[in-house]
Length: 327
Image 1: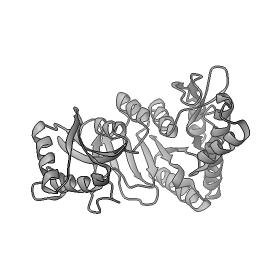
Image 2: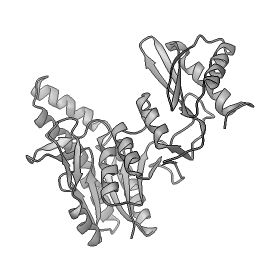
Image 3: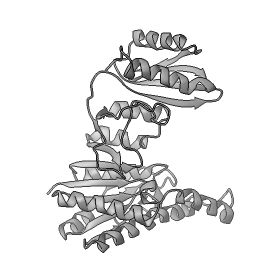
Image 4: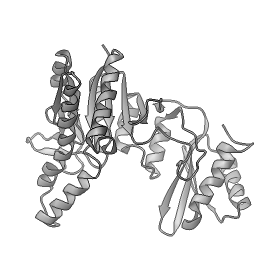
C-alpha cells in the first residue's frame, strides 16, 4: 500500500473546527487506499507568540538551545490535537515529535540541517494500522537536543519523510488553492496553474514569494519527490510540482525592495525579446520601469514602489490575459 504525506500549515489548524476538517482530509486519503502520514505546523501565530514569551523571559541574549526547545512545543500541540481528532472519528492515530519520527539533525539551533531520517518507528506505526501525526519543524541532534529547522521547516519535515518512506506523493495543504499566474488579491482574473516545475517554484521562492520553504523545494527537486500544493478548505486539485513544465512564462511575482518594487516573470526560455515586450507594456501603461535582472528562470523589472501592483497587472494582461498572451 502506497504512503502519502499530507502537511498542514498553521492557518489550517488554527481552531478545533479546522483541525477536525484536516483530520477528515487525512481519513479521506485512507479511504482511497493510501496510508497517510500527517505532518503539522504550529497553529497560526503561535510561533510568534512563543517568541514573544521567550523575549520577555529570556531577553535578547537567551539560549538558542532553550529557544528551540520552546518553539518545538507549538507543533506538538497541533500533533496531539490532530491525533485526538482522528481518534474521535474512529481511527487509530499516534502523535510523534520530530525526534520520535526519526528526524536526525546537526546542532545548528534555529536552522538545523537534516542529516537523515530513521523511519523505522513510522513504518511500525503504519504496519500496526495507526495514522502517524508528526510534529513538523523539528528534529533531534546527536547529543539528544531538540532542534528546529528554520521558518517553514515543517515543509522540510514533510519532504524528508516523503523521501525516506518512498511516498506516492507529498501534499501541502494551506489556505491557498495552489500557485497562480499572479496574486489573486492583486489580479482578480489570475488563474491557478495545473503544474509548475521544481525550478519555477525554486525561482519563485528565491524571488521572495511565500510559496514553500526554499530548502524543502530544493530537497524535493534533488530527489524527484512529487509535490501537490492545494487547499485545506477545498477538495479541488491544486498545483502539481514536476520535473518539467511547458516552456514559456508561468507566473508573476511582486516584491518590495526599499523604495522600489520588483516584478518578476517566472518560467523557462525567457528571452530578451520577452523582456523588451514587458518594458514596452509598462511604457504603454504609463509606468516607469527598467530591466533589473534576468536569469534562466526569471526576468525582473524595477519600478517605483507605488507602481508595483499596476506593473504586475499590466504584465499579467500581456502574458496571461490579453489577445497576445504567451500561453
